Structure formats: structure tokens, C-alpha cells
Image (tube, rainbow, N blue to C red; front, side, top):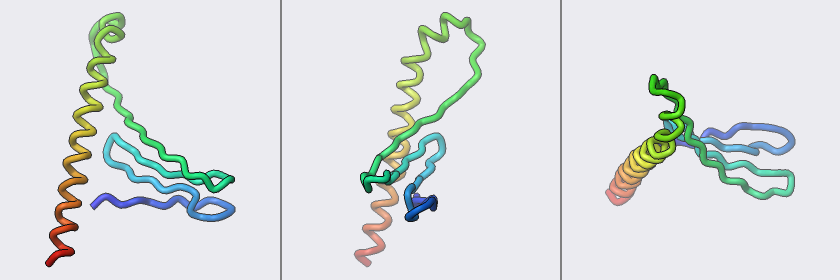
Length: 91
């Protein structure tokens, strides 16, 4: 089950909560005016032996495909967890 990790800071904890899902990180932070900021980060790096110009030309489309796949995987995982939670609460 995916869980939020609260990160304590001063003056009033928690000021930040994070959920790390492999290459994806979701965060919620609270600023000094008590506003909530929602963050989403996808961090992917990989070695490629193609020419520099070829990488520049092809990487944007490849990165989009990777991001879509990662988001689809996350969505399926969250739906499966939600289904398990719903099933457990009805029994």
C-alpha cells in the first residue's frame, strides 16, 4: 500500500508529506501562509550510445512514452489498492 511520509520541519510539523513511487515522487508542502503546494516529479535517466544530435532529436518523444507508461503503471497500482481497500471495507 502506498503511504505518505511526513517530513517534520519547524515551526509546525508536518510541513511536507511525500509519497515515493519508484521513479515518481508526489509531495504536498505547506508554506508560511498555510497554503498547500502540490508537487509531482518524474526522474528518469538512462545511458544512450547514439550520437548527441540523435539523442536530442529522439529523446523528447521517448521521454513522453516513458512518462505515459510510468503514469499508467501508477494508475493501475492505485486502482488495484483502491479496489482492495473497497473490498476489505465491505466485508
